[in-house]
Length: 621
View 1 (cartoon, rainbow, N blue to C red):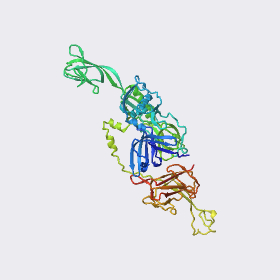
View 2: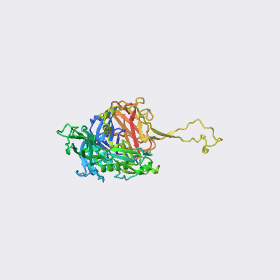
View 3: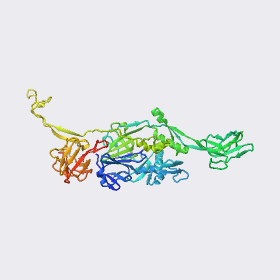
View 4: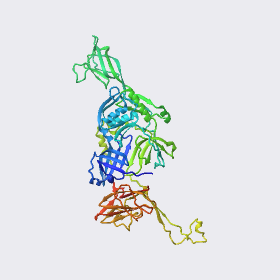
């Protein structure tokens, strides 16, 4: 059964739960390189208790489990509410650049990937928890790259997951699927939607070429002097050189220099152009093979590998080339190509599940039992989780180990830099985004069931128990009396947008209800009371949320059709009904400060109603 757990939103040590609005959500994604994100919507009058500024710490809990730890990065005001965009602490590693080379023979990490990751995390100012891998890199470099960038590369090398564990307050680096979740997700039991499965062949790469690796070797090349030519081209890029020239008196070693920096030198080299150039063109006189260049050269050694099983299965070869600046040896390239093939060779299968299994974490292995589609049943990885406040269920993305073939670029900013574009282009692009469309969602509001008893003196078609044509007249002049026997609100939530008077008790309401302006206006002591908003079921608990309120209002609720009312002391808090039966739930709101007050729904920037003036959620224990 779906449970409703107590939430907590702690902003720099201040509890702000009573100001948080529906629409607030926490999005956790295994592949999110910028850290997880929380979008928190709060009522604008929160500023009465706390001055919100960027950089504030926010901690979100549901029950005993921490759902988020991070900072406010963006503050945006919209009409009567404030939207806080927050990123978890992992994002801070995105802006810490460093230069370092990890060498298998020199550094204490000895090339082990998890040890390298741990060092990057700890020197970034965080506590780390890593699981040792069996993969070793001869060299792993960072040349003014961000710590998060390098960590993401390492996760892809060994198929690990990097995430901030909010319960332990640690940055974790561990294998995907390290932990298996105990409870299976069963469609129709603890999964409340019918899953739509997606199979993605587009991301498959079953033939991969890794560039960037090289090996060093020693070469000897001979050239013919002309007496006038000064530049000669080598086959490979020169690293260490020894140049000799014979101008008739035997071979004489030439002195290497740096152009515009050295004095009294004979030649210079250009590694990029693979050339060497004499300072004086006439130094090598005309002759056959009278110029000898001995040098150590760097030979590019790309590594290519394919997966025959994938090619045979899909009947198609899908290739991809990768060029990584941190790959410098053939062994490293072979390690990278093997890991990439294991990630990319087969189509990913995924779906979204709505569940109340609250302890699921990213990277967990979970068994999904799809009774409607048995071929899809099996073990999957948890890739994403969305917590929508105050909904009592989570939206969980599960699937095979999915992978973005562009993930190694790690961010839009890096892709722009790869194209040699200015860094400020990103900001200019973002500033050109305008909202040109508006999405309006329609859903059901409530269901009423009415019934009437048959009159024994009236003839009904095809009903032998009600008589025959010889015994009765063709009906009579009386009408049947229908009585409402059941009222069911969508999701057991009475939502009042004040667009009509369907649930307004006009006999007991003295406040002014305006369905055009969508407001309730109170003068001193005036009352707004509903008719029964739920009927036919005895409920045990309720949670009341309101929209935009001005003035002072007293909220009361009755779960026994007005026989007794209880005062609602706290909004947005799960509370037990004191007296409850199936005769009806009624809400009463009274101005209690000898003044005036008003209540209305919350509106978007487009002046559409987004949250009701009254939201009463009732649940059966």
